[in-house]
Length: 138
Length: 441
Image 1 (spheres, rainbow over the protein chains, first blue to last red):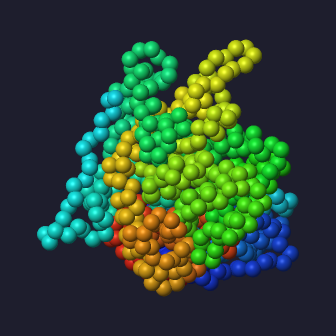
Image 2: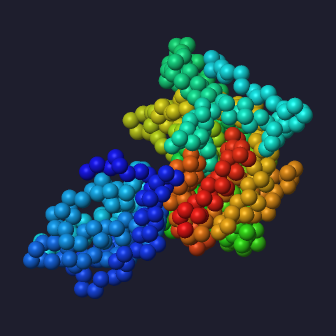
Image 3: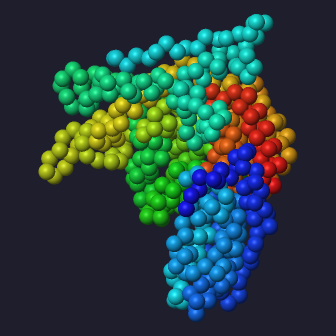
């Protein structure tokens, strides 16, 4: 997936991407626990104190993700990434989610991330993929 | 010795009225000094680099870079081994670096100066030699609430094995060491007190001479982590009367991969070796070995010779500028930056906030290490925002998680100055912080 049309999240010239990012950080979508979740998976970055717990409900018949929510705290990138991911993965197949990677998170965030910030964006995706890995439903 | 430095002693530049430029202490020409640090000419993301992460590591002047290259170009041979001239020259350069460091910190001689990889390895050396010998039967270690992980974890590691106990000197609300609490904890009769000279988070300059006096009165040995102080203050181990002192080359404008342990000769003589193997021995039989003379007893294997030689050049660089001038420059920056940072809306400064006397003695003071929280902005977001403007600051826990926990934080931002930092860079930081608050909250 190409990231050439995106810019750095905090660049003075990337006001649009930043506005979207900040909107998700300030007014996170799907924030809160999900009762009767099939997956509850926490992932933390101890170095900066970012914590994200992803809750997901699966549709076993169609092998898709039915709903996702998250809780946690941390930097703008990690929290906005969790919010954006919780919208983006609904309806996706388990296989599609397992195939998601850095470029997908950068596309969601509309920003190219420096190596030191990638881990913030990847936190919710890593939690979700790890949760899928330990989930018996396929 | 063939390691020659380029002429670099800066000539004072004056404006037409004969005044020294703004922010320049007497005898100190920041512009000329900056010219000696090639990396400062770089732009980052299109903006001039404002490097404000000196507490993490400092930049290197050309003559230090040249000294390391020059060693490989003209002097490279192993030390203490060859009988040929090249090896003798390499040995002389390496020994000369120990002599330079000994002079720089006021040690009695080069035999009290051990080169390690860094300050962390230095603490480990003390812990696994002196500590192993004296804490095996238990006992107490006294640390402070403001220590870097490197002055905590090695002690924890040996304390767990040997059932020693760690006590902590707490802080005053201003972020200074609580000297009354020091007395309370000293009354528990610790065998060793290990304390930082300058806090890498709070910027607090601890009164080491006073701490040492009180610690010695209860029979404790004193270790000082000088990683943040040797590049900022005049450090004299005999005046401070410390038993051990450690620091890293890379935070004092020298190379990475070389650090120093100073130890009083009586301690080093009584201590067993740290790492063992080649070069730290006199004779080896199938059964046993005998140890080499100081300081080589503590330098096993081929050391970082080029880095060591360059460290010698680093202290000559600092001596040429003069540590009094460096500290005066830093005091000016502190007094300039403190009110400006405090005036940024939503900014909460961590550590002592009283301005320091422009001519005051080195005592309970503050160094140019400014940790802060800006509204609810995560320090990594703030650091990324500033990075886009060419400003390099640190975010995170600064390898001092117990201190941050004491302060009720998990992370904070930190800007730290160096010899080449200008008031203009402080202005740049302050202005970008204002922008960040508007953009990110």
